[in-house]
Image (cartoon, rainbow, N blue to C red):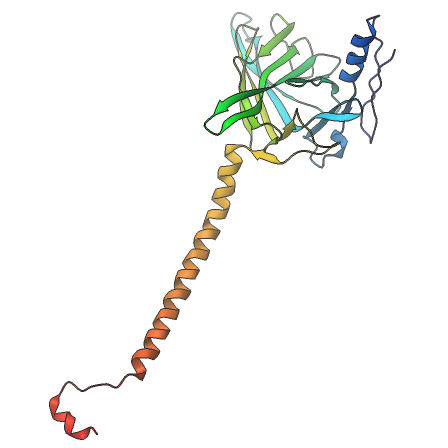
Length: 283
């Protein structure tokens, strides 16, 4: 049967794909995997994308972020003998096609654009571990896979030996977040991927990130955010001068108050002359 995708607001993309004959339980699972929405049109930032994966009419994965890839590739020098390295800057567009699947401990978001010339797959893993406070669970971004085609002419110009390549993460443990919470990071993060194209290093730049691949409390609603260390440090740097200013002001007020009280107390006391000859004038 054809897969159904919900449509909310423009430019949400409608995905309909015919599946080969499969068992009923497998077909139901695949249908749930494909219930996805691209809500990037709701973002005021034209570089920020919003993606939602839903299963059984319930949101199970939400992701908001701006992404760009920096991909090195070889071209011939002017003498057609030497090779030089150029750089392609590939942004994630708003019109990306979306796939996804949710599980108890594993979830996945897959985005593709320009007729499958570019595909980004993000894999998430939730796991438990023992701590001094007892058993705790957390989730993380466990794998990134980016497939790109250097025959595509929008971003690649005259690439040597053009073709498809895959850049992948190696033993990735990123965006680590306590279970039941969303990950938030406004600051830019760089994740390095290793390409099948002569082991070149592909850089993924992420910013304005808000992601939750598990335990979403309600439709289109993130749980309480877990801020990345960079955001926490920047927030502290912003509030620290204010805190220090308040403390300094409080110290000044207390000092002036003590001085005023001391002055009143000393002014009300009888002044005893040090010169004994002045005693005859007293009384």
